[in-house]
Image (cartoon, rainbow, N blue to C red; front, side, top):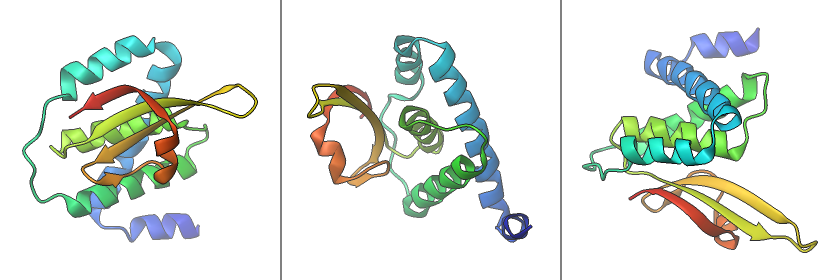
Length: 143
């Protein structure tokens, strides 16, 4: 009940962003599971790879991240970093916010491979932080 009460106390713009985040996560999760990544990458490059004209967007980045975090917490499925990063990248680029989606890999001590995806906006790394420097970037979408 507390969650519902706190949700209704949010401003209308944040409620809209929350529902957009839920939809974006649903679509990105389905895409990652059903479509080969080369097709997803091609779509993202064709649709949102252009450089945007920067405008006042500092608070938008934070609110988008918060909306996605809220959506991830209430959805019944687990959203992996790739799905979250795709959703975040699309939401940012729809608003003209310059963003770059990275996917990287690193070798672990037991010789296995670990993969991770994250989004950067200018100097700000949204998903992950300094830990991303350990990954070798294999895919970069955006400018």
